[in-house]
Length: 482
Figure 1: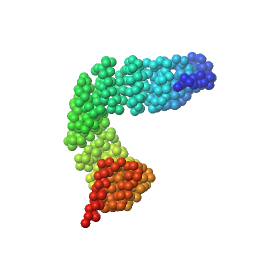
Figure 2: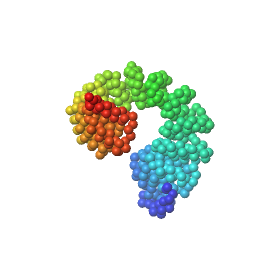
Figure 3: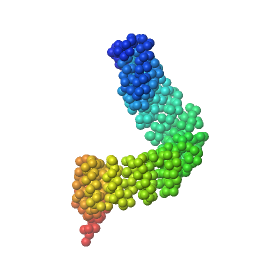
Figure 4: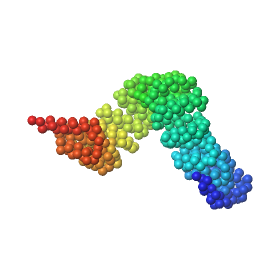
């Protein structure tokens, strides 16, 4: 992309370097002085200024300067500066080295500008393995798994050697799209290219097979790793948890600790969640103790998971003690604690914390609305939701419908329903709640209106809705039986 504007840029900036240093642009001292100025600005955190000076200078710079600046642009997601660098490079260096263009692709990828990256990749007169690696990695990191896999297929067809980095990116993309057959093909290529015993790729294969639901293959792959590293252990624990095997997740976590591997904070959180899946309160307390020992208790995800664990085990006092630590108070922990109080029937504490929350999400509103036993309190929360802009949210609207339906207030429920239609599309739960309300108060006419509305507007009458309709008509029929 930068080559197109190259000659124009050179003409425009012919004398710019003189204004910066007072020397002619073709003087070696001029380039050296400019390089010093640029690097000083970078050291002071003034990336935009550094790149601006380079861009305004009609002289080529050492390749190491471009490489360093591309790296800084990537880490700062500075897309404007990255584009200026590429433009200057291709303007004043007739045949830029491939490794520098690869750095530019990496920068664009880390700045989430995949179109720029692909345009540069396609324009390169010569590519090496690093060029393919950079582009495939850019796609993979930005969630474009299918593009990454398509480019890898093309790379393989052209006989370009794939590196460890390429395979790691491709395997990650396989896991994202859950393509098992493709994962097995890539696994075969890993073996063909001689990466047997590479712990990074073997850990990636454990992850892919686990994501695809093949825990037996994932475990076999893990057991075949000669020296599992921290990542290997963290991956296998997570995959067992997500496969619903909490017992084995905790067993692998215990082995991980015995092998002196270092768990990440999210792995400790996953192990606690695994304990919850099979009611392992005792094991959860032990993992809590380990978390304190390795100083991850202060991590907001770990602390929120601990709050949830103690709350679900009925120990609200321990949950509250963790919540009251300064580092624990965040949106997740507030929602966990409000939910714990609400589900335990302690609405006063739930309401106090709910009012104290610095911000509220759809989840926190739903927690309160679902647990409220008192109609008047429900109406108050209804008012709060309306004033704070959550009224039009489908899930909050459904929860409000449920409150009024539970208390037999069908007219109020219908008012909410008609208002929802102007803001969002009702779900199956919306119609199920309304039909259940009609059944409870024997409101045949209202039920028929809802049924007719669904037919007129093309809503699917699936098994859930069919059941709700049958219940309504049966309940109302009982009322009119002689």
